[in-house]
Image (cartoon, rainbow, N blue to C red; front, top):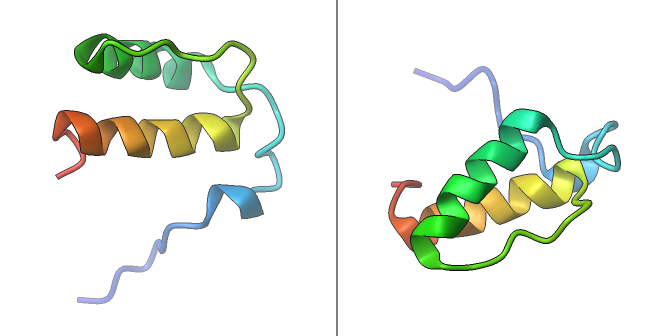
Length: 63
């Protein structure tokens, strides 16, 4: 079966430069606690998405 919703690179999001969403911030803090890192303040949606991907890999949640 073909995936009909391909992932779009966060750099290509039309709203990527807007502030991260509440759910993104909450999930980032959850992931960051697991690997003992700080979440930078004032991330954009695109930056938050990239950091979520990175932290998911580090925590094993992205598998």
